[in-house]
Length: 500
Image 1: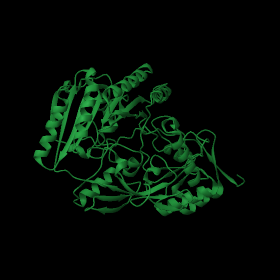
Image 2: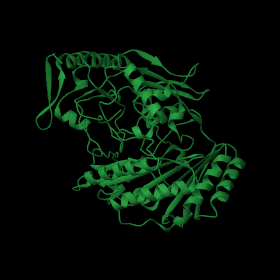
Image 3: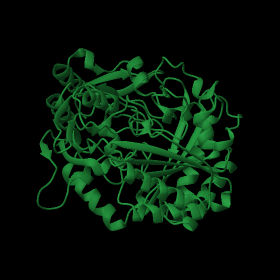
Image 4: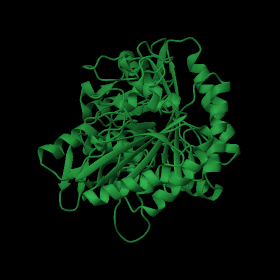
C-alpha cells in the first residue's frame, strides 16, 4: 500500500499497521470510542480458551448502516475483516480473528428484536440478541412460542449460534434449520436478502463464514409444548453402546417429533456435575454412559406414549431409570446439571481443571471461560447413526485423546440418521504445556479421523477442512467467494490462507 500508515502498538513491540485513512474513516462513522486500536483493548478482544491471534483493531458498529459503512471502508483499502457477534464462541475461537493482521467487526451493539409474528411463529433478531434477551422478550409479551436455548447460557448470540450450526435443546436440535431469511451486507457494502422464493436457497452460503455479514435473521420458533418430561438412564456396560445407538435410530425414525436423545460418557458428565476432577459421580450416573431423553407434547396421553416408546427402546440395555419434569427445554446441559439454579450448565465443563471445578465461579457471577483462563477446545465430528460405525470412531477418538494425556469427555446427540459427537478437550491454561498438548491432540483427532472419512461439522477458528468436501464443491465455493469478495475482505482468497 502507498498510503500513510497508522501503527497500532501491540503488547510487545509494534503491532499491525493499518492505513491512517481507513482508521480515520472508521472513527468518523462509529465515533472514537468504538474504534479500538490500543493494546489493552486488542488484548481483551483477543482473549480465548486456547492460543489465538490478536485483532489488528476492533470496530463496534451500532446498526446495519454503520456495518455497511465499515465494510465499504475495508473494501476500499483492502483490509481483512472478521465479523463476530457477542464473541462467546467458546472452544471454537471466542471473538478472535482466524489469523494476524485482521480487524474484528464486533456486532454485539446490534441487539434489537426487529420482528415478532406470534401467529406464524417467527422472530427477527440482530446479531447481538442473546438467548436470554429473546426469552425475556417472549415472556414479557406472554408469547406461546418456546425460546431456543443452549447449554452455553443466556448471554450468547441466537443468530451466531444458528449460523455456526449450533445444537439447541428440545425441538431446536439443529439451529441452522430454523433460519428462514437473512439480511446480508456484502463486502462492498451492498445488501441482499435470502429467504423463500424461486431458485436455490441462498442461506447456506452464509453459514460458518460466508461472503457477507449477516445483520439480521428471521427464525422459525416452535410453540411451547403443554407438557414436558425427562428420562435419565444408565448404560452399565460399554459393550451395549452400539445396540443403544441403533435403538435410538429406530426410535427417532419412527417418531415424528417430541423426543430428543443424548448420551454422555462418565468423564463428560463428571466434568459438569462434580467440584473436582477426581471425584466420582453418584451411582445413577456412574456407568460408562448416561442417557438423557427430553420429551414434549400437548396431550397427556401423547406424552405417555412417547415415554413408553423410550422405555421400550432402551430397556434391554439400560438400568437406573429416573423420570422427572423437563423444566429443561428452556435450558441446556446434561442430566442433573451443575446445580439446580445453573443458568449455563454447558459451561460447567470448561472449569473441569480449575480449582473447584464447576464451582470455581461463585453462583452470583457469570461464567466466562476466556476471562478465567479455562482451556477449552471442541472436536465435533458428524457420524452416521449406526452403532458399529459410531462405536469404532468413538474408540479411535478415545484412544487418541488418552494417548495424548487428554481426558476423553464425550457427548453424543443422537438423530434419526446422523450422530453429532462433541468431544471436549479441557485443561487449565495456567498449567505449563497445557496449551501445546491440547492443540496437538486436536490436530491429531482431525488428521486421524479424516483418514476414515470423519470430519468436524463445526470447525475451530482458522481451520481448513478442505479434505471434508467434494473437490468440485470446494472449487465452486472458492469461485463464488472470489466473485463475491474479490478483495478478500471477509476471507482469504483461495490458496492464500488457512481459514478459507
